[in-house]
Amino acid sequence: MEKKIRWGIVGLGRIAKLFAEDLQLVKDAELVAVASNSIDRARNFAENFGVQNYYNNYENLFKDNLVDIVYVATLHHTHAEVSITAMNYGKHVLCEKPVAVSAKETQKMINASKVNKVFFMEAFWTRFNPSILKIKELIDSGEIGRLKYVNAEFTFYKLNDDPSSRSLNVNLAGGSLLDMGVYPIFLSYLMLGVPQELVAKSKFFDTGAEIQTAMIFDYPEAQAILYSGFANNTEMKAKICGEEGEILIHPIWHETQGFTMVKNGWKKTYDLPTIGKGFTYEILETHKCICSGEIESKIWSQNDSISLMEVVDSVRKLAGIEFPFEH
Image (cartoon, rainbow, N blue to C red; front, top):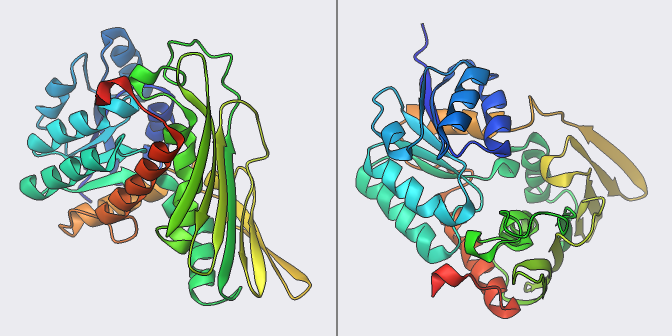
């Protein structure tokens, strides 16, 4: 019988639930422990998913010998500390995006992975989406010629949220950029790399949280126009344009089920539905790396995570996005 990789989940919000549902679709995965700051939430989550062990303390989960790997789905500003603690207990870690709130924190997480010789990856599920993998392959093979333009947006109207909630609370690293803006930035980074120069402007809520950020990334031969926001809803489309054609990623683009390539007056649509919500692919990549003794993925490497966070740091600096706990 195939040996199962045993998962623990810390931070039991909406994303953790979606992740746990997809975990059930991976045959060599088993959810064996969950932890929350609330014992009631931990118990309910465990009961819903038939999980044996549940804790109201993350560290108790890290001490659980049944757990091979921890999926960190806590609040953004705790990602680094929680992940590093888990790795110091010898656990592999898949940490929800954004991997941290800064490149500096990200580097500490990478160091912990190397010192403890454990697998560590940012859970950037979009990188493993079948459509994104295919688009990258087509672009790398020159299918639409040299790239000239990327356009991506990610928004949800959240101004009605409780001001003390995760989205609008600067003490919890709230704001649209870390929550959603990392996705458009990711697409530009994946297709064009780190920009030479960038422009960024933000709008802010009464709480001090950033609620709209517009960005222009400038590259030697291309540009990207990117946007994230809590102040409005959009279709959430994305497109990648080359000299010989363009690729339109079907909305909601970051969890897309397909795309259309337009070239020389004709269109070709690729339908690539995901298994489950789409977390399955990052789970499979994680398993593959652990089974082969790798401490990082070649598809979304630790260097990719830190490079992306360096770009986010630059956007924050230009747009004046600050968090009280960083001072």
